[in-house]
Length: 369
Ligand SMILES: C[S@@+](CC[C@H](N)C(=O)[O-])C[C@H]1O[C@@H](n2cnc3c(N)ncnc32)[C@H](O)[C@@H]1O
Ligand SMILES: [Zn+2]
Image (cartoon, rainbow, N blue to C red; front, side, top):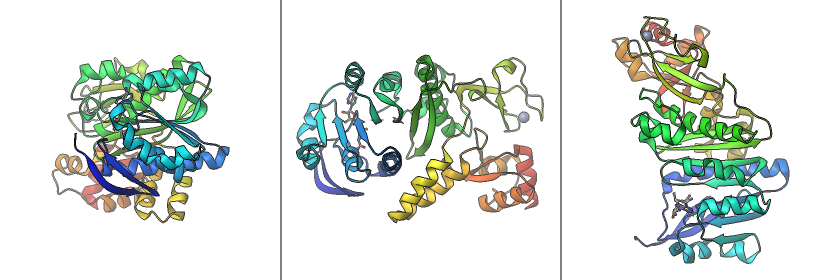
């Protein structure tokens, strides 16, 4: 394996990567995790973190240094990484704020459950799909605590392997232009359903699609949150490009209102809000205070898109289907506002909008603007 002996700096952390897996471009996911954890700590006064797949330990180090975690358990399945992980976390370990183990993540979760040792933040940064850890990580999470999950399995999430999505999410995912948002929603929906089997629920704190990786930060709550309304299907019309939210009871009867075509149905998945806008605002306040302007911008976009319908329209689709030049995003958003529609950019795709207008309306408005 490649040995990287350079010193890296991310946030307040200075560390070496050695033979561990580390991607500098995932920094945005670590930054947002650090903000959410810091907000949690300021609300509850305590923060105990379990990082189940810590690689070189950069996240654990940042949760300790920047979110001011009281305790960080950095677990990493591969014992070959032990020297670098111990080295990076040496100060935290020496000051009694951290421990390192090399166990399979699922053993760690059940160990926590067995000892009734529940964590404020459980971070599972796996390769591929997090399905093998979805239900088990909940066993280690405190009620009211946070669960941060990663999925790098874009092929399944975007509907390019519907059979696989049945095994991974218990959902039939199809391909369509807004499929990256679907990736986030399948993941949230799947955890929501797993939590429901335990009589619990989850609430999204934020959902992030960046660098082809899906991440969701979820709060575990004591109440069942899964409903027919927030867990269901989206239908995509290949004829006109519009989307519909499809309720369970209308599954057999739904057609496109514009052209009567049958819809390509995808799901079930989470149809509720992608983020908690209030918590995002507080994360943004921290980003402002720490002068991380790029993250401030990202968090603003995320705040604005939080409560839109569960899909977006790409500008390319609007142009192609309207047989016109690709419209300018900000101009189109402004024109939709002038027509009293809600509209916003989306962090998921810089060349797309989220709106409560339907696609034919977007095309008509784009044509006039
Ligand atoms: C994506 S890397 C972690 C990167 C790190 N969290 C970061 O932000 O730089 C995933 C890590 O999980 C470890 N891993 C894979 N499966 C595991 C399992 N079942 N239990 C514990 N660790 C595992 C791998 O050895 C790898 O180091
Ligand atoms: Zn249609």
